[in-house]
Image 1: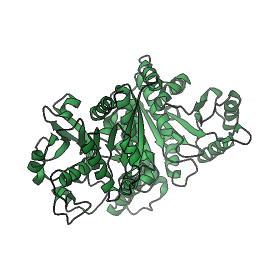
Image 2: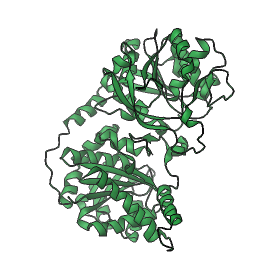
Image 3: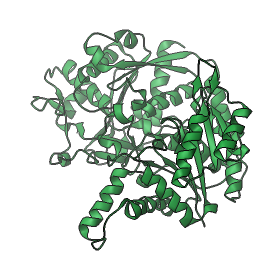
Image 4: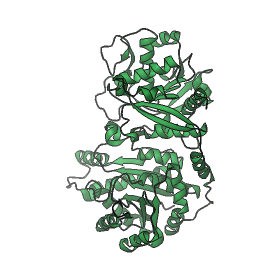
Length: 536
């Protein structure tokens, strides 16, 4: 079987929607019976986004095998409903680290190490791994950044070489670009797109398709103009206007005939007729007027909402399942410490405290947990949100005034959250946490068990610190239930408060496994209880 490659490049600006476009096209190809895999190439020098600030990079998306990856992999998994692995994301940092380590071992026999061929060969090797590991018939590869970036050049050169190696008939380039709107004249401009294609062609790559993105309607004369100046067939210039519903993009891609055009050009044969009706129902459901449920999201990085991309989408999935609209109130946890932002918390039907690292804003998260517990507001804590819930409980229910996590106060007399034993000797920050999929055994008769409806689940983790089991008995006597444990009973996975409508928190990140058609049970539980409380 010959693998076909679809390469997505970006023009004019970053964040133009390459990831969502690739995910949407991947879904429409899967619907036609093809086995698809997706890969994101990130040109930055970091080894992975795991050590990067959420303000710099947005959310770090964790896969089953523990890979810390780009948030676009969340789009791929949510749209196409596949489980990806670490071969689906790599960075310049990984490519250079691997090449340098080979040079140090003497693998190159004293040769001069250069971008061409050594770096480009390593890039091609890693692209080839996806087809080998997954057996995919079609591999969709998104190149991060924008054409013209210095960092992207080795990646684009590698793609140019790969096209010749695997055969031009097996490669299809899609250039996703932006048409800026000039308010003074009331028109869209194609010139930046022409320039970005010129840069791409100067590298030796001519796009087979251009997806023209805009916030405004794109007329036929504009797409014809792009086709003429960029040397692309008229039917291969696809206008893609921003949708108010993210999950409508696969329907727009389908309607525009993108998958059929790609299949024809790659000489593929689909094995079944696509059924996009479930997606149409989903979009219709999103647009249907529904009662609004307010959820206060108390986080540390709320200025950049992309830092909580999967959390936001999981809330939307759960809202749809409960036939409500979710209105997220973004609250900076540090503001609560300064007596700001409480109006959003107090008017909310539910409270969600997501993950994070570092001591800034921690007391605000603890205050939010206390408010939820005392006022009986539905609460869902994720990772750090579980840890702050237990710290609050220790301080205000068990009267352990000094209770804290040793992450924030190493001298705390009561470190109810502490480092795992195997983490204590680690000095490197990157890729050294408890990462990836781990099993969790649910305790019968608990809210968590009722939400899941099964006895054991597997969930994705990303953390260093754990609940300190020395305090377990005291917590249980005080009214906390450890409703999810690791199979050996050593690690707390889910905690909940007994005499509360829904105060549940997990050490893992349930948001990473929520899907539009299969919302995550813990989020559904939060939304259901918040809906009941609101009387809507």
